Image (tube, rainbow, N blue to C red; front, top):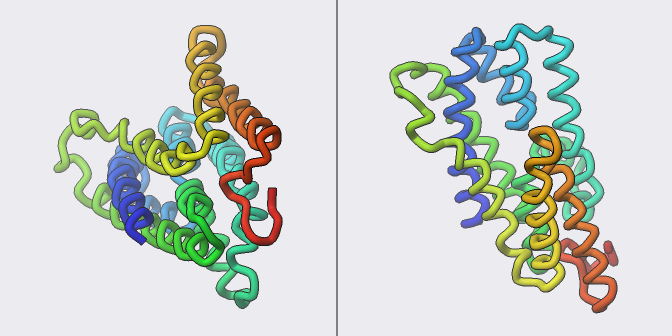
Length: 227
């Protein structure tokens, strides 16, 4: 519960920046708030608003947002066992809350019961704080001053570091982090912006290989035998 609420508050601060950006790019307060309520995935929202603000078409903005949001579908098979036995209505609500933060906090817990609690705590925490932040940012707008001076560009990376921290307690997690860091850093000057993070995903394969060789259980394994 503590981790979920903390992640929610940190992400809500970024929601504030999104609200200001949305208004600056021509969206109304209602449009900005509706986007956070219905889309609810920060990277996709920021990309869509930035593309429209730069003169791009609604189609280009939508396609880019969908591509970024597609990664959340990969969390479905991980989260599904935590919600086993729930009614369809509950699972439908959970589907809206499947994001990096909720899946990350849930997967970091030691047993299925706590994974479920972690998922709901982070999912609801982020949803409430993100939407509150969006509303405040959209309504207050320029009254908040220069958001760059607030250092909000560091909020998202800090939140992801917090999500990864529990996994560094395992040797396989440390292997994954080290390989991902080296690959991403080494490729900064070689590939276009954004690709170093994608290439860093090979760290996950390195971590899985380490776990397989040592017989360790993967960070998100549960009692139902998931790898």
